[in-house]
View 1 (cartoon, protein in one colour):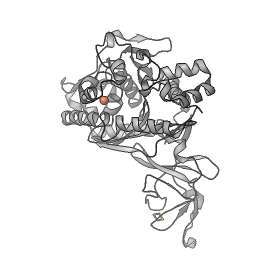
View 2 (tube, helix red, strand yellow):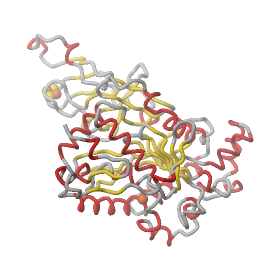
View 3 (tube, protein in one colour):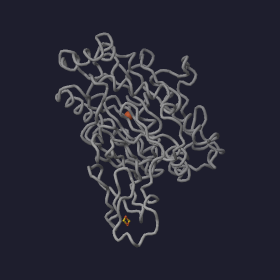
Length: 421
Ligand code: FES
Ligand SMILES: [Fe+2]
C-alpha cells in the first residue's frame, strides 16, 4: 500500500501521485468505488425509459429512469458474456437488449427474457445487471456509490456541497435547474487531479488565461480574480470533505455582474425570481450569482456550467461540460446562458483549452517522477501559498485570499484521508 501520509503533506504533494499507474488503480477503488460520485442530473432522464451513459471511475454505467419513475445506475455490461448494452451517450428505450445473444433486460436491470431458455438452469433473478450500491439525488443532482457502503449522501455533501448546490438551484425561479442540450468533452493527456486543482485555482488567471483577459477586458473576472491580490475581496475557501470554492461574492460591485448584464436587459427573469423568492431574497441572489467550486471528487460547479471530471488512466482524462439552464424563464434567457457557457468553456473558447495545455505540460514534467524520488527530496509539488494566512470559520471552513492555494490544499487533504483509509 502506498504511503499516502508521506506523499501528501500540508503544503506539498509528490509528483508520482499524478503519474503512477498503481496509484491510479488505488484511486479508482478508494475514491471512485467506495465513495459518492456525481453521475448526472435528473433532467437528463426526466421520462421513463430515458438513459445516459456515464462512468463511475473506469466502470461504464447507465443512468436510467424506469417505468415506476425510479432512478437506476446499472452496469453497462450484459450479465451474459459482458457486451456493452448502450454505446451512444443517451437514448430512450423500453428495455435494454444485448446485441450479442439478445438477452433482454428491464429498465431496472432485471433479466426479462433470453432466447432458447430451456438451456439455462440458473434462476433469472440471479442474472440481472450489476448496479450501484447506493443512488441518491440532491436537488436534481444524482450521485451514486458503487460499493454501497459510503454512508448518506447528505454526510458526503456536508455543509459546503449542499450550500453550493442550493445557491445554484435557488437562482432558478422554480428552484430547479436543467442542463444544456448536450455534454462536450475535452480529452486531455493529463491526470484527472489537475482539474479539481485548476478549476479551483485563483492564482493562474493572469497568465494561463492572458489571452482571455486581453480579449475580453470587461468581464467580471477583472473585479473577482484579477488585479493586485491585496485589494481583492474574493476568497479561496476550503469547506472541508474535499469540497472547495472560489467565492467571488465579496467582490461583485453590482447585481447581475456574473451574468454580464443588468436588470433592464433581463426583466422577465428578475420578475420571475422576485415573485418566487420575494424581493429581498431575489435581490441577494441577483447580486451573489452562482458558485464556482468542486464537489469532491468529480463535480465542478463552474458558475453557469456543470463539469464532470472523468479519469481514464494515470495520464489521460476527459473534462465534460454542459450549460446550466433555468426553469421558469423564457427561451431567450436560457439561450443567453448557453451562449455564455460556449464562450467560456467550448473548444473555440478560452478557458478549458488553455487549462488543458497547462495540464498536459504538468503531466509531461511529472512523467518520470517515481515514488522512490520522494525520500530523495525530488519531484515535489509546492502548494504552500497563503498557508500562514488562512482564517478558520466557526463551521470549520478555511478561507484565504483568492490567489492562495487553500482550495488545492483542501482537495488534497480529503484525498489523503480517503486514500490512506
Ligand atoms: S453477451 Fe449479451 S446476450 Fe450474450
Ligand atoms: Fe484556468
